[in-house]
Length: 44
Image 1: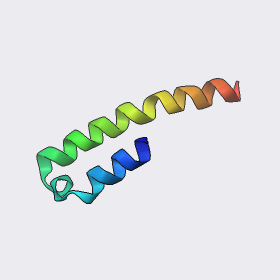
Image 2: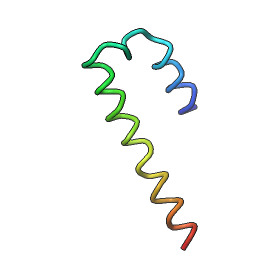
Image 3: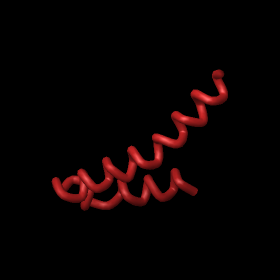
Image 4: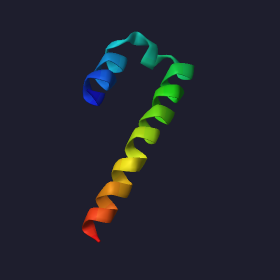
């Protein structure tokens, strides 16, 4: 579901505009951060 959401964002031309690309980057970091926490917990 998240992958489809990201693909839908990437498919829009809005990602190429500076303001929207920054927004997408921040959103992407918010999505990735919990995944890194999960991975680090699994490794330990």
